[in-house]
Length: 134
Image (cartoon, rainbow, N blue to C red; front, side, top):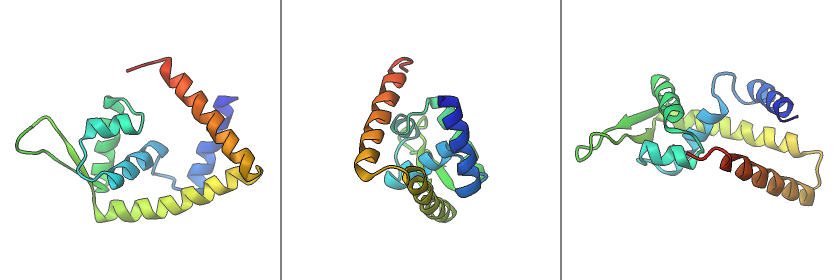
């Protein structure tokens, strides 16, 4: 059932949000927008990605010129992330579409049931994430 929900969500995302921007890429853009200049590793934890996946996503976003990575002179190991103008535009457009998608997905539930469902899904996510700690 989880696989089926995931497949249905991905299909809706591609049709209604963006055919090239993935959900994890959107999460990274959202986090970079919220915390400009934050360190790549810290943002990986914030968006529930492992370091290697985060590095791959950041590389792709940088290749598309949606973000920039800067290395501070005091620590050559760190990578600080910033949105570009194109990244901000992409995030705004995708963000509006994500909101519309979420509204459609939850339209069959009363507001009180939406809150309960989101609480249950959050608890399930946290429980499953705990099965494979970093």
